[in-house]
Image (tube, rainbow, N blue to C red; front, top):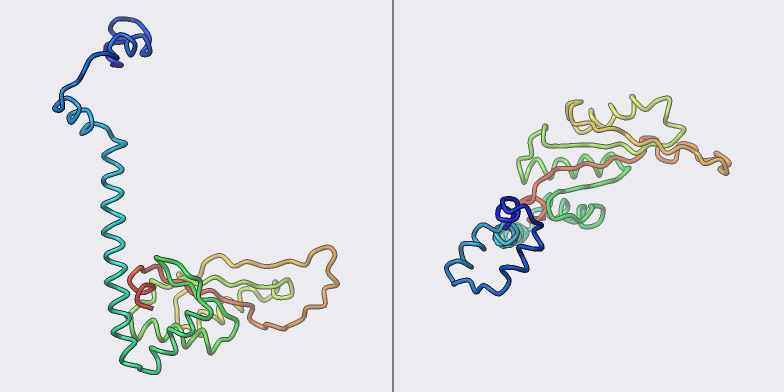
Length: 190
């Protein structure tokens, strides 16, 4: 219709009024729908959603089978994630301030899912009194987890508010760290 309106030199609404009583055949309706990006996009999106759901269900089944083995590292790793992990469909996020706990969780991911070093991402959440040793703390976590510096993302430093009495001192000597691995398969198996 746009082409007709352009050729005739009238508005699209005028052409729409002129042709509104014309009945289209089923074939013509089908051809119009096949060229409609909105309808085609909805069909593709629905198909993608269905396939993604099927994949997630298969991953969950696999995880249930693995859990039945009752291996200590696997059970403990899953429990750590259920307690301290952020719940997401497509990524594993684990935050904590306890170095031993974080190291254990990373060992679980490496052992059971074969996660390579370059797939890990870590973020440090630090406090104002950590500011002068930010670099040292970031490298503490990298060394502890045996990860290259390319895995380190920008750290967050929480500054004191103007109303704070600035009494917080060294309660968490290394702040907190978040370890992330973007993998639908892993998170659904856990």
